[in-house]
Each structure stands twice: as structure tokens, then as C-alpha cells.
Amino acid sequence: MSRLVKTEQIIELAMMFQNSFSGLCIDDIQEHFECSRRSAERMKGILFDLFPDKIEPVNRNDKKKYWRFAKGTMNTLIKFTTDDFANLEYLKNLSNDETRVKQLDEVIAKIKALTPQKNLRALDTDIEAIMESEGFSVRQYSRVKADTKVLEKIRSAMLSFKKVKFDYNKEVTAEPYGIIVNDKYYLLAKNSRKLKLYKINKIKDLEIIDEYFEKDEKFNLQEYCSNSFGIYQEEPLNVVLEFDKSVKDDVINYHFHPSQKIKELENGNIEVKFKSGGKLAMCYEFFKWGSKVKIKKPDALKEYYQDYLQYVIDNL
Image 1 (spheres, rainbow, N blue to C red):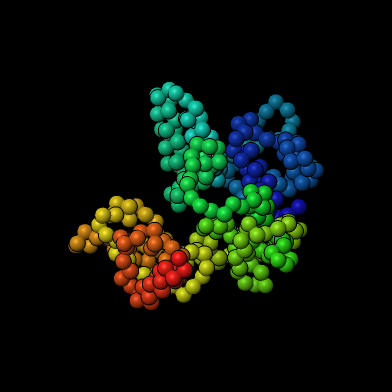
Image 2 (cartoon, one colour; image 1 turned 120 degrees about the vertical axis):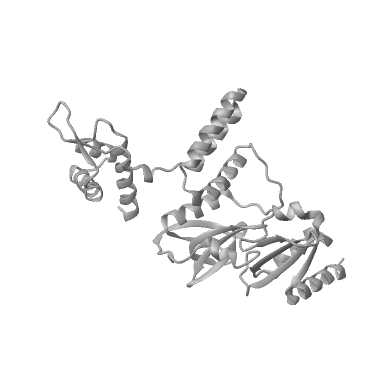
């Protein structure tokens, strides 16, 4: 049994001790986890060592020994998942009773208040994805499709820290680190000690192999992506843009880059600053804003954009 599985079982057992008013005995542990009595004793011993001051004996009308946790012991380990919130939203959308809808909104707000602040943004993003999959929301964009079965395998591999093997014009064995979504889905994986990007729609015959890897503890996917405007890593540039005041509201509520700083200028225009690589991806973004955006700095980016536009005109 892997250490990860053992840890999950100890946490599960702790939740059982928290939720049981009448207490648990060794037989209960043995039956629930389908293990030997020796293993059940060992799991109980680990839990008692971790929470020596939180164990309460429970007296019942037999000769067995029962225990439970003091009330509130596991509160910090209880968390609400995106599925929990999505199910509440689902039930809310089924109701035609305005009072009940309002009450469910209040329940959702109360539960979110118990959720650590740092998790709220990711939680809201996940809820949107779940609602989208259930047909309650639609996101309009052009994007290359990715096989959901491949995505699920990659997710499973990342959760279990197992390597994957797939065909990418040649056989590749790699350590999956994350998925980056742009106009396409990309697998970020370590191969030959280097992080590389693989277009998921071009991955064939992906399988999880029974070989574990140790993920670099210092790696942070969000920080990795912050180094680039698109997906490819480049030397970062200090970018300064000026947007016409006619698109002020759109710019203020628009996410260009994680490092962005936005301020209103004296002439009413909006200045946006950020530090990033990915010149070509920036050009794609600038083009969407047409004549409403000007590149103030750096000159190298301005020249790159001019060359790019000229290239497009020449090839019409």
C-alpha cells in the first residue's frame, strides 16, 4: 500500500471519529477498511499519536472500547468542494420559488464564508466549469478540442504522481506537471529533466505507467505561466500600453496578465503595465483592440507588431 493511500485512510478515519457520536471500536475500523485487526490497531494508534488530547472514550453497554473525537477537532480539515457548490447551484436553478432561491443563495454565501480566501477564486472558476458541463452556461470561443478521456488520464496521473507514456511522432515517457489552456490544450511535462509542452490533440495512445516520480516542490504552475503572455517561455518585457477612453470600462474589467497594473491617465485614457514574454501572443491580443490600443513601451515590441502587421498585409 502506498504512503498516499495510507494518508488518505488516516484522514478518512479521523473524519469517522469526528462524525461518530456513539464512538468507534477496533471492529468498526476493521470492517470499514476491510483490513486485519493488526492493521486496524495500527491505524488507531497513528491517529491517537496525532491527536493525543482530542480523544474521548465512550461508554456503551458492552465490553468493547469505543472512542470519538472532541467536537470541532476536524473542522479545519473539512472543506467544501466545487461539486458541493455546483450541486447547490443546480438545485437552486431547478426551483421556481423565489423565496427558496434566495434562501439557497444565503446558504451558498455562508458556506463560502467558511472557505479559505485563497481558495475562493479557484473554487469559483471550477464551479463555472462544472455549470458549463451541465448545460447551465456556455462559453463562446474558438479552440481546438481535446479528448476528455486523455484529459482525465492526465489528471489521474498528476494526482497519483505517475509517469505517462504516449505517441507524439515518437514514443515519449514524461512526468506530467500541468495542463495549460490557450487556443489549444497543452500538456506541460518534464522529459529528460526539461519542461516541455505537448499539444494534447496530437497526443496518441496515452497511458499511465506504473512508475512514480517526485515533482519539484518549488514548481508553481501559475508562476510558470506568469512568465509568458501566451504559452511559450521568452525573455520577459516591461510592457506599457495605452487604451482609448472609449473602451475604458472594458479595459478596467479585462484580465491581460497576472502582473498587470491599470490606472487612468489625465486625458481619460487607460494605461496598462505588465511584465511578460510571448510577443506573438501579445500581437494577437493587440489586434483584437484595433486602433483603441497603442504600444508605449518597449520600442522592440512596437517594431515587432509593425512587422507582424506588414507580414499579414503582404500575404492577403
